[in-house]
Image 1 (spheres, rainbow, N blue to C red):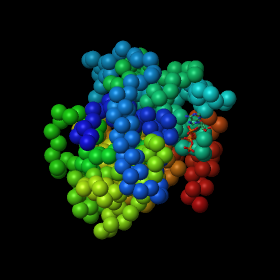
Image 2 (cartoon, protein in one colour):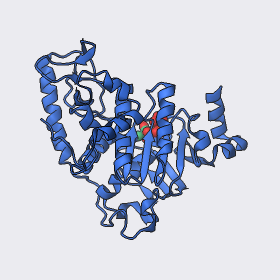
Image 3 (cartoon, protein in one colour):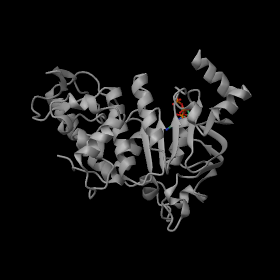
Image 4 (tube, rainbow, N blue to C red):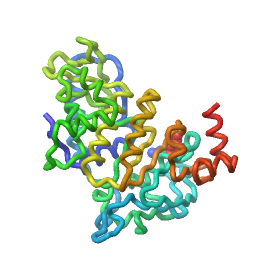
Length: 351
Ligand SMILES: Nc1ncnc2c1ncn2[C@@H]1O[C@H](COP(=O)(O)OP(=O)(O)OP(=O)(O)O)[C@@H](O)[C@H]1O
């Protein structure tokens, strides 16, 4: 029913659309009969095709990314925010105010702070889901807006708290963001699944990597019933293939595997994890974060998390946000010594 491999820019569009609107990230709910499940699936597929054809409404830059002969093209992205303010359309207040910071190529950066302080909004600006109301963002010393958006996004990998599961097989879901021409072995897929902490879960599915998955978005308000058959969650007896709906933690593991598949096979220069492991048990979360750390060569990595302890001491830089801006920057030891907002948050968590 669906293309076996979506193009990277299509997938980026879908995932970014979903993040931008928020409304498409509905989790699976209760009730519904087979007819409504079919209706829901059809409209989801229709929406997916529309999303594939989606063109970004942001003004396009013309500068290729990476720039030809750029020395830094095999390093992580250099990122600079210069007095950046963001006010969302139709909002009466700034989500980010006059924010300035620098991230050097290859740094591992942790962004921390209380709810609603602009952490995720900072990342939306980097992906150009929105442009700053004032101020400027530079990537590798050039204005972010000067770059071709698709080429820039192709060098970024985002793992969000509510990742999208597409109506395709487990394997296709893991390989989604890869070029269709790339040859992929089963071992590579299994390796990515292992790094994402989902290989054991997949091995328990009757069709393993070929198991068809229920999408995690629900565009027209239809809700999908979770039904337990033979130990697996299946919907709609009319569907021959198993359609398995996923729990939050399973979705995050699958999305992590997708991210590792991309990191192992593409020239990614920026990895962003926005609460991407928040639904996982502490051991799995620690293991996945450790895999990210091992993969960091040639990449800048930014993590937003409310659980700092796994990463704080490894971070080259911690940006602590409060009142819609960065109020402290430094290493864990610097900020603990300073005894300010970060120390307060960290100590509260440790306690
Ligand atoms: N698409 C949007 N439209 C309007 N306002 C938004 C939008 N997204 C976020 N906001 C607002 O911007 C402010 C910052 O939100 P943001 O999600 O960046 O904070 P956060 O620090 O990531 O919070 P949390 O830790 O809860 O995820 C909040 O007041 C939020 O309500």
